[in-house]
Image (cartoon, rainbow, N blue to C red; front, side, top):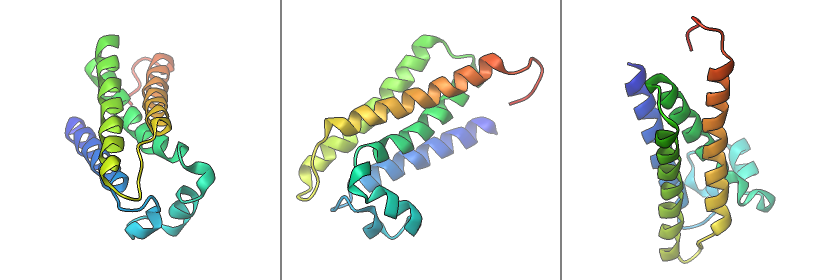
Length: 135
């Protein structure tokens, strides 16, 4: 059951990333699907790149949990991280075909950092948790 919940959550976040990345305008308030307090923050020009790292942080957390439950190796963790970087690359490449959007290497770097921090946070929590305690 946990596996299905992790897969469903990660799939939802991935679809949301692609949908929001491919909106005709970078202003997320136009999507009509996010609360005003979130769009006020994301549409502020000072948060242009960092806002990309937030959903990838969640993907990193989800994949970190999955890796911990699977007893994943560092190679699997690296592969998973590379998949998230690839997703960011796909999202940014899609913006090349939208007139009001543009490819931004900074977004890919923030996405990579967010995914890495998410995976690392779960790994550190797993290292320091008390034996015998459930997650």
